Length: 284
Image 1: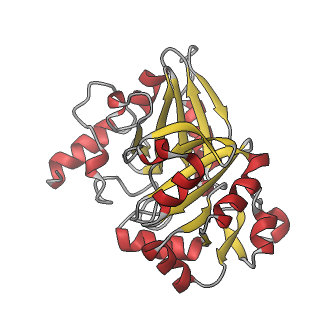
Image 2: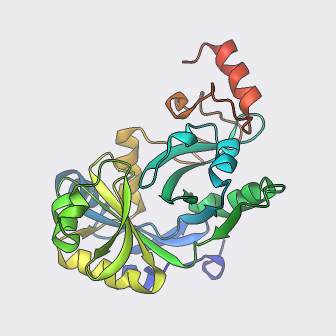
């Protein structure tokens, strides 16, 4: 794949200016490292690191039956969501294999957001929209190009974010989200991450994410690339699509049985295959 074919996030020029070593990842030209993978890894473990995750896909689902649609799409406990809560879930095919893994946000009544892997965004979009046929009261919209997204991770992440967003930010529980003003920018703040440390992911308009990055850098966050993101997630045991997950690997085989609700009444995609595998294989 040539550089001309690679997509670039709104933070591409910022990353280059900060010395980011760029490389292809999931169809994007992303920084693999800045100062160095070891240094960035330890910055997240000991202080606070800052990642560009704008390459992730963002798909909005809304409508009166939006929750029911998601319940039919995902093998997880979707109906347990309430406003301001989030859920990690696999997206499965009829054989139980993982089309992707994603995070569901409930933003408001009848309003949901799916954050999906960059390399699977086009596949996920086609998969989800194809299965929305017949759900005339459900609206699906691709917000990926409209938003920028960063992750602030590490034991000092909460103090840094609080300095820019106020005390309401640190009152967010794990896998909770809320709209807040951060450094003068209206953004969606969520308490989650992909490193095994405390931290936040922040989503804002694409044309403001460079300003947000600069504010977070000025507050003390060290820029980190995808190299450290990978070593950090490996230490934590998080799956990466294309490595531990693919369309031939089920959530049960990947050790993700804790994400499943195979007893729910919804006739979700992959239900028959996953239930049969659990029974035959002795999975929890």
